[in-house]
Image 1 (cartoon, rainbow over the protein chains, first blue to last red):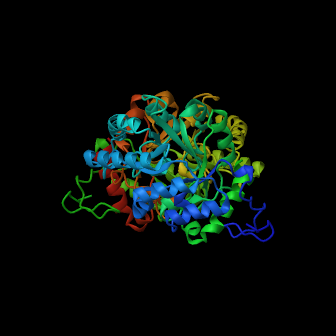
Image 2 (cartoon, rainbow over the protein chains, first blue to last red):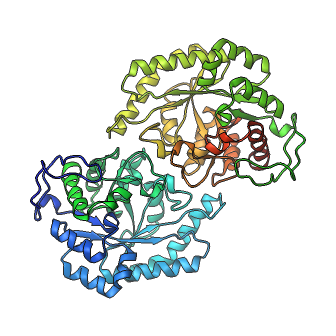
Image 3 (cartoon, one colour):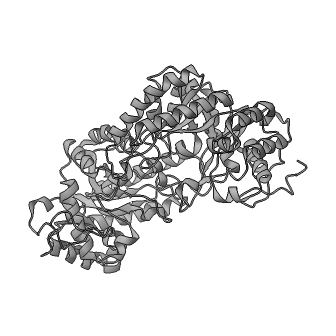
Length: 296
Length: 296
């Protein structure tokens, strides 16, 4: 970390860094977490090492790289790393036609989250079936399936985090599109059992987002930071931008979740082909700079 | 119109038609309108002729083809055609940095709508400035600019229709993303001065859409029909699907606007490169079949 503002280059913009890269131990990094999807080409071990080199104190692992390493080994690695586990991504897809398969898979994800010491499991609830137009029915299926999972998760100390996704993903990934709607469901359960995920990329446009963040209070299980950039790429899933490159008020939303009582990690999650093609350390350094520039 | 269900082919799906093409005079076509953008390669005169051949009783013209023909000639053509003018597309972009240019252009659009006998002018309110993150500020600019335009439009008998756009377009095209939000603004003005546009493509995902349609009542100035299809194309603007090809409950939303007191046209507006590449008469025939199959 000997870069200075004048030599470092932000990725993926290629622009000179606007601020010096914060060094390990910098108190402004205290709540920063790296969601592993941001460095998708790295293994879990590489991501953990990358965080340690850069002084990022927390990580949000994904199921696939955990499975690659093996659950027990991944749990040991994370425990020994000294990093906090900020959340575990990802389960859900509760609207799938084959409900028992979906429930079984979610129970496995809950078991994994417990073993990894993750405080919460991020739930992307699923979209419509091919050709289905019954949104209300799909939403009801989510509630029913969730009711089966909550006791299982609660027994294992894993809090389920319902993630509203941008309405662009309503048909294929999540019939929960707003924070208010996610809270309507979460509030059927105890606050320590079911909460909500606030991801700036998904919620920034919502005219009710600030009042719903206030309503969420300590139901917010994780704040994820990511920017809305244009154009939307051919694969719409990969349109997530580096914080500061787009239109979302990532800092304003962070202040709002904090004002509502959230004290947890600020987890940077970016799916973006250009970010994935860049050097992992350069990605993390940009994440850290943008964090102090736009979010802290 | 001698096609039968067994020989006609839907566009752009290429699938055999599921129902016979309704003939001119069929009462099920009584409220159907063709938004001109659906047959984008046709001139206004060609679109008018296409509607007459197919027995579509109304049309929603766009400014560009009207300008191509000349306003006076376009007004004469529409008057002589016997077609209703269902709406006029499109003005707005009130968040533009150069406010006086935007207002001047909107006043011209209002004049044109009056001359064409259009009952309403569709307003796409505009997005954020490059790099701007102040959504609340942009929304306030919309309200301010609208307040200047309303008396001008009211004097000319043109009702302004605020169109909430899908949140996918919040940054670049419309900081109004939900019907509820559009109504919050519309309700500052008289119902015959400012209403809302309900476009199934833009609002289908909204968990509050049915209650907001009920709230809108007769503020709905036009119901536009279009389906949500996947994948979202590289140019996200062109992702609008033929009714029946996707996930939006276009018929359910139509029943809701009617139940709220709407009695106007059902205007089919589809921006889609495959639709535009197809024969215009085949497009209109598919529009008519899908209308009786899914919407009436």
